[in-house]
Image (cartoon, rainbow, N blue to C red; front, side):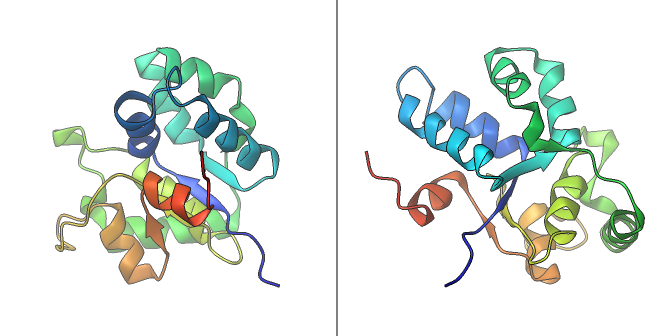
Length: 160
């Protein structure tokens, strides 16, 4: 029997779910299922995502504060090697001039440092250009599965 998938979620996916598609006041059962994934050690994110959300200091960040254990602060040789590879190979993944997310490489590296790799969850779409990549572009090249929030809901077979 195959192990249940584990996920590394991006800032864009959390914001999209909270503000656009599945606001908690209307879709509480979805957020309860996210809690179940967190409790089962199947839903993670980078501490960098937490710090991005902290800047907003809104209800989504309050939700995240109560689930801070899902936000991993990774260090160590494996992490450093993977981060050096990702940033060296895809330097435009982060573009501070355009305020492009500094958490993106961390979300990918959280996935890459797990064995097997975690599934990345993002609302970003691929650009098709490695010279200006988004998360899905890097995931494709690195062999990491990349889905969006709705894909996660379908994959987990959540029925309401």
